[in-house]
Image (cartoon, rainbow, N blue to C red; front, side, top):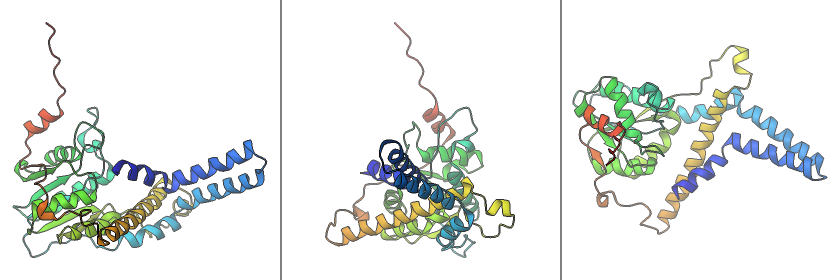
Length: 294
């Protein structure tokens, strides 16, 4: 189900949808007599590709979503945990650890470390599964956190969560009633807060990785299609689809499928490492030694 959701959502993203539409128009032109219709479809595809990469449109779509929560400022309360949600990585020994994380993950981790240093005694929770690699996303973030000076005993790993729903349930089983700051991308903050609140937590939001800006004065920056503006449109559409899915899922659960959302108290303790050591990371990441032939 998780894989199917990812495949369908990927095909419905703006750029793949425009490309599919363009190829459909090309097929009509090449293999049928409906050339005018095919030409019209290709024109729609090209205009759509321009618009989704156009800053006045992309920023107008994304900015209201990103600015629902303001940046985290120090509060006069004790914080027990700072949780950083996963956002993608690669495993490549030829690049520095910071380059193994996606841009979103690196910005989330940096913000989490910034907040962690405001509250001595707080622990840093890092979440994320392997995502097709041999190393979990949480462990890759831990390697970077250690390199940036975070104390080894202050890192906790949740290594099996595949999406925000699972991250929220695992966090609820671990954090329980203690104070939590939740760090994720600004565009993802609303959906993440909904998931954590439905899991029984009331975290303090700490959005980061803001993409949309309105103060762009240079005409060549504002009115020419660019990949960064395409990314903004994709982030908006990704989160919009996620919120629609979230609403449908919760509606189905409220209609009587009570097993769809498990009770937090019934969850097993998530896979957690109380401490992350350099030896742990080296043992996890080191290649296996060849077995000597007899």
